[in-house]
Length: 233
Ligand code: DC
Image (spheres, rainbow, N blue to C red):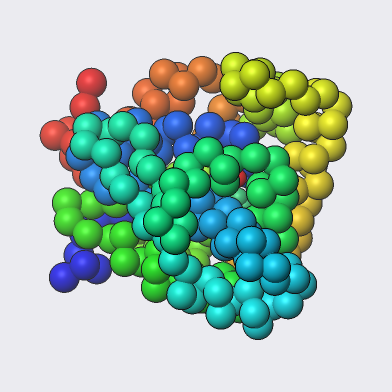
């Protein structure tokens, strides 16, 4: 039974490091990985390419329901490749423009509904690490371990800036900060599955932590919930 596979949900705002933490944790446990943000990004990119208006909820939701996308998991925790209609769009979905469009389509309840089963299909033995905004509240409300990562908007803008710079993309820090603030506002205030911690989520403030620091904290909770054998080193 798919439902019997355990799930660890990792939710939080943009730029908090969820993606990295989810990837490292899934690789270490040997579990599957769901990057749910990639699904919203794929819907945004595909809808644009088809010339759909992002305000046309019915059309975008219909597209999302049949989303012609595929995730190719690499063995041993390598990067997951993302295909849209057979084309590798792993990098194309990471731009700030697609991120902003994704935040818009993610505000449409019909689109969220259309992606529910697709996300739940990722729950397969031996387990799933699911990264997003509403993994613990809406998609996997029965997950035995729910983590919610936070960090100040300033710190998240700095992290994103560094990441983009490493890729050779030069964006101004103030612009990035205002974009992050705008996206946060939209993600938190939308009526459908807003970005809030589940009542039973563990909130980890990562503002003053590096990735190993966050991982140590995460592993501590994994051991607490799944026993010492799952905790790793
Ligand atoms: O995590 P990300 O930046 O790839 O997410 C892109 C957008 O999708 C972001 O603005 C919020 C939205 N999103 C969502 O609403 N629910 C999720 N489970 C994941 C992402």
